[in-house]
Length: 229
Image (tube, rainbow, N blue to C red; front, side, top):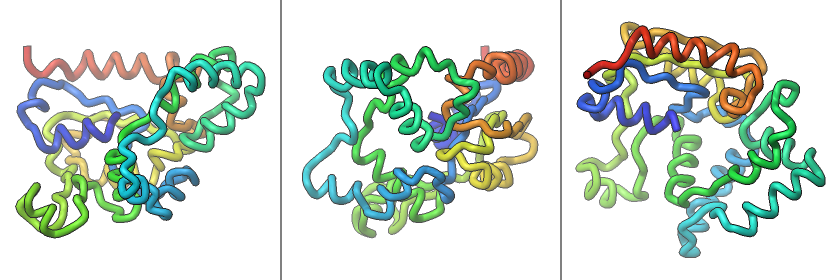
């Protein structure tokens, strides 16, 4: 998601030159304050390293069984799906379209690689926004030419940035967003707004997002982009 955007636009000015404004909904760069007990536990228990040692390379892989079963579970016991999603990412249930829960859970969680989860755990444990740590000085030297993984420096952001974030986001905690804000050059940060009580998924699944956020996004895009024709 937005983490990829932050990494790309600090490393590849050629890509940044093609983007008028990077609009980050529920932005995540730093992850020092995980509000999700699930992700915090995974990092503390070093689950990523255990799975890697066991030769497992997928985390919560999608399957036809889950894609079929979860929507039915949500129809029968909607509270299970609601609480699971809110614990993982934070949400504002009073504004959510509850009739769509079975559709949401048919696609989320959708799985990822163990390497990606290891990187997330690394961000939590290190309190740094940096490239993947290959686990040893020699391995990092082979990949990066230095003993430790290089930092993604938000001070090097090469495109304009607009941030929309929620006070109840357990993946993009406001304290971590503020850390990013202080590092992004002031001439690149063209807009920021915090939404009280909003969680991570509120920006795409909330009934009010289309009224309170999307018009502002379209206005920002119209005002600042595209960078290149």
